[in-house]
Image (cartoon, rainbow, N blue to C red; front, side, top):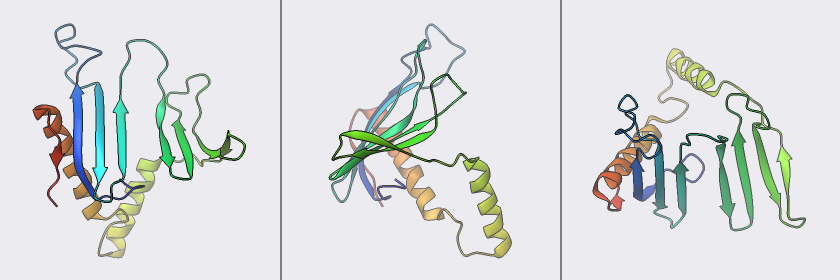
Length: 157
């Protein structure tokens, strides 16, 4: 939503506990798998997937496909061998990926620091607008409703 805009219009989702079923693991009471399809008012679409595995390599990131290009982002987590935090941009003429430098920061600490400084300055709004946060929560609620009902959910703005 931060990249494509926060005017998401509909959400379709399947969210459940698949990898570690509650019947086998009553102490693990959380959803571990999600597939979501978001449609914006402008017609843009995105899919979001989250899956857990009992064994294997874990990779975090995103793949972005645009009219005139592609990009992918990978996030290192837990310092696993061969993983790195990096952004790759497609070189459409060469058909290869070009690695871009990504400055690693403690993004949660940075966001919290910006929030505190906005309060201290008496800003009218926070660095990430509160309205954006509300829209993110509405998309989460629509995702949960869609998963519960099995139907596409239109978000009322």
